[in-house]
Image 1 (cartoon, rainbow, N blue to C red):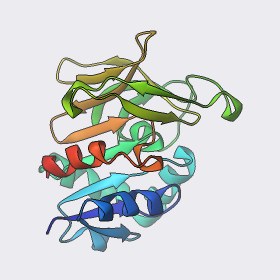
Image 2 (cartoon, rainbow, N blue to C red):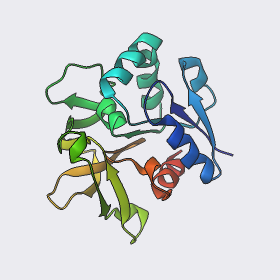
Image 3 (spheres, rainbow, N blue to C red):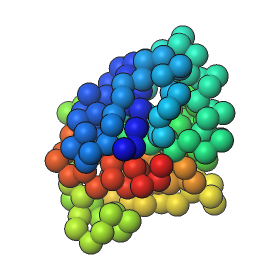
Image 4 (cartoon, rainbow, N blue to C red):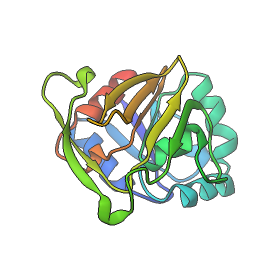
Length: 189
């Protein structure tokens, strides 16, 4: 059985654990760097990216995660997780892992009241659209040649991407009953 860790410092980690368990994957909350031993992949959940980033520094995740990901451990960032994985974030100097060749904008679509849902074409998941939930979501502003954009909004904003063993979505698949994004990530492990 696959064992996937979910960073459990702040944010929607419980929902990711439930999504993984629904597809028969052992999901483990990760609160300390030593708990990364034995996991085959890690999810960085949505939440408050500045808070998660500061807590990652306090607990030492900023020192160990980069090496693990560069050695090949798959990592998936949703919303705040996307921000933390990006090499650059517009208008902030918050702590970042900076591992993925993306520049993103926080709250790209507005404030909490501007949150939205839509059916999104994600070809790597099949023909059926994915019902995506965007809550104070970031968007990709630019990306390097090694980044594969997996989904865009009708206006052209990139909202899902992959670079090698790193996956990001600006939306929250853990808030839906559709487990295809989690299944895709598990296949990456």
